[in-house]
Length: 153
Image (cartoon, rainbow, N blue to C red; front, side):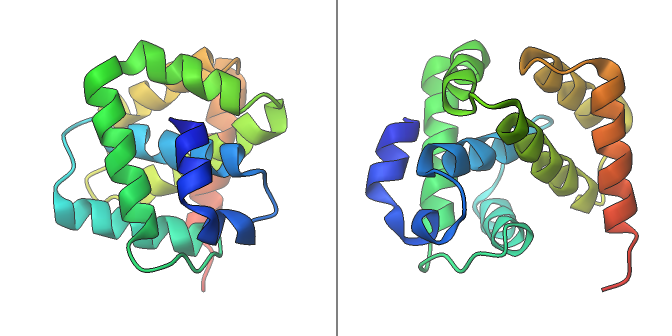
């Protein structure tokens, strides 16, 4: 899936200072975290796409991130979480890329007014542990995201 996303959506992927598979992995991590408590509606997918473009400082073609997010949703439904986590491990080979994906994912979670540590936070920890981070490292990533979210601007 990540290779297909990379090949079919070269617009914003080419703008990033990351390999396409890494950027697709970052988008998928954000999607998995944003959808950890419920299935995202079309307006929520649109909001997530705009937020990702902002957080990643990219200007995707119209609807490009929405298409990526819809593909993430379809594959999650078809393959399940375990298969998607394994795909992420293959796409996000470098620990720095995994950390970056979790940082963006944490910022996505914190942007949600309905964020609850006991639900989405627990899934963040489970996903992060699956990606090879310790609980302490994950709590640091969450704290850093909270600090960035509280900065003016």
